[in-house]
Length: 255
Image (cartoon, rainbow, N blue to C red; front, side):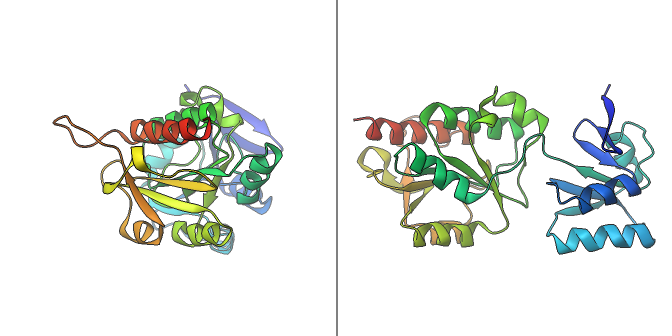
């Protein structure tokens, strides 16, 4: 059973907000949104106002059947609209830079290109905290955001590692490069991590669980790095691969 509560006249159902007035009030507040779900074929003045805010703020939305919204709201009066909210606020890219400066360390970022499993994201956050990563960058679309499952899997690390959500990964990589950050993408055919120079400001790109790093992101990166394997299975789970490479960076920096 999901827990219901009232907060600032907005009805919350765990990480969901539902009902036209509640959703409109929440969106108008400028608070962070994971995704908006809209009942297929729904229209009207309030829905029009909601969608104006969605488009103006670049919020990801999806049209779904009423049965899906019934499930998300636990049978509540959703009126055809539900918003999924992050349990923790997203950070800004500058927050990661400031964290590295405050610790007098070279910037170390993880960029996740389309990670869809919340358990993988939570595990990556947990390892990132353990090795001193200054921030994790995730895309708004076609990827998991901050959810209660992610928070639980991270076992508290989510409170210590800035999570930055961006619209365009390639443009963000270019911005990092303009700031002197070297960006490396994981790839089956890349530089052996044992020979990889991971010193200096660095960002490591981990790809989608099935497809790996997208072509555009891979082309934008400065280089590629691979984990040498001698067994019959030539790929690792995304969170495991991320952990291996993060510890490789940490090992070189702790010399």
